[in-house]
Length: 311
Image (cartoon, rainbow, N blue to C red; front, side, top):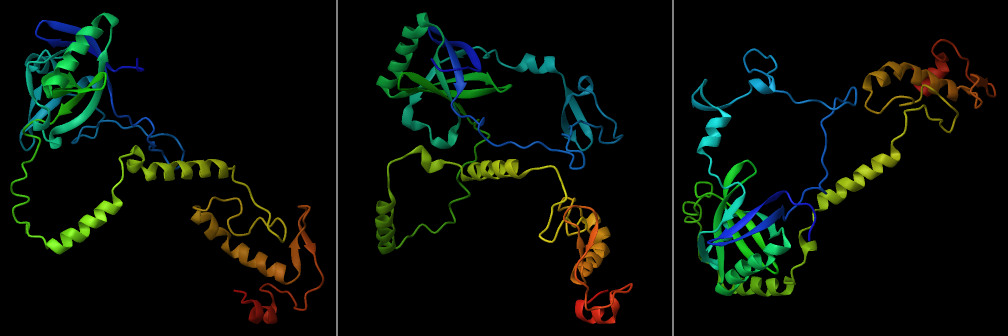
């Protein structure tokens, strides 16, 4: 038996009833998800509801559902009123209608779910319903409350189980009329033959790797790389010693203000190195190198100005 199920109830066909469990056939558990953070503090931000006019926070108990009948005017619907109009198809899949399996176009399909017996005693009844649909080439139609809303569902026999598809409502699906009529339906037979041969060369057996998500792979690689490279911000030592004023030292790359404030010191520091000064590798301050051929004054001297472009 498969793992955790998110719905349990009963499958009913006339006098035949059996307990069943259902789990979604798709999963987004492996998808990369991001949280919204406060960039300044690194803390997660919280989404809250506020009054559109006053700007004050609205507590959960004060929130209600409303239907806009005209701009700025709403009809408020209470939870008990919604419960009164909802159907009682919350825990029983009562199959009353069957249609040919190939009569429902794929456009009507919404989400697939795996349906399986939830009790060994009910496995025989489950198998009878499943095999009867397979033999007759039909699928069952019913209604069920799922995801806080009643939905039309289709039951399709699949191997030893049943795939339950939620279907779109009739008013949710657009008719193709009005979209395809203006398309020129004529095609050059020679080009059709050429493209057909190309399709033949590129046809292969279906495999799930054909629909893998490269974005998720790229995101995982990016995240792992940033995990490895992330370190506490520290001043780095350059080849010429531990210059605390070198570009970006001790500041994150995005700290434009710090770079701007240190710019004059970086220029003077670079000039000092070129004129014979460098930081002591032991971190004790400036160490004197062999005398510079240029006299040093407040701005590096006239000769230094012309040669080193001192500001």
